[in-house]
Length: 333
Ligand SMILES: [Zn+2]
Image (cartoon, rainbow, N blue to C red; front, top):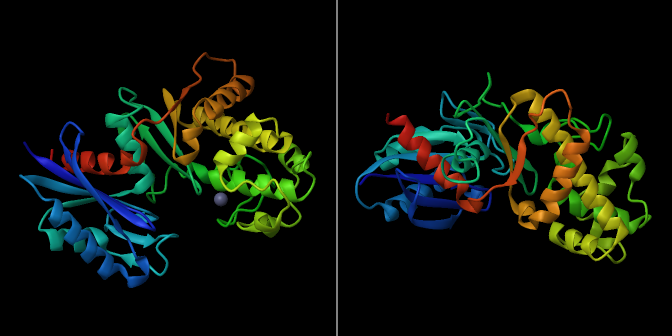
């Protein structure tokens, strides 16, 4: 039996796994990433950890990394959560240290591929995965292949504009999906609302798209000084909403509505069979899925009966290493 190693590089921890050709994880470990020590030290750590996992014949390595990446050159161009990393030739450096071929892929794309080969997207040749966490990561599968685009940046759906002139985003746009529907955004908006008018959490922004007068007040940590209730996690917001807290219920429902808007736009762009919701927020289960489906039905078109199914991802935090390993096998064909 041959194996591939899947590596998922995160800003805090990196995960490595030995995976079979039929996508079963044989062994795995997690190591701290420590990006402040510089790319060479981190690549050394990854190589050492991969060596520790070697067992039996390894066909190759799949490396899932935060982007933007230059896939042709195998470099990390500039990763937001790996400060100071510019134009790092991580693919070739790791290949040299391991003596194995390495395939580089964007982490969100690798996770989507993992769901496609072994999770909630099995059998869906056209699939979109939205990972709802700190931001909104995404991967698009078209005809069973990851869609990369001209500059390898296709499918950055977290920065799809869902509110014209909406909340400012660090990316430079306004009204990006991840300013409303990521786990962090939900906490920020609920805290902000709790600190202002608890009964009307910036409804004017959400409903009319009016620009927020002071986006920075909405920055992480703004809720720390807000009077109670000031939720610490998106799960707190979901619980409070279920308990009848009107503010939290409204923030949660708006997050679901904008996700549904994104799903409508995704339908028109890619016509996927299924859209999977992954990441920390997806742990809310039916509390997330039901309102997103309801808003999708309310806002989707009626010309064709081809709205995508919206479902939960099933690979959890293993999606990245499973997808990366699958890509390593694919590259050997
Ligand atoms: Zn943005």
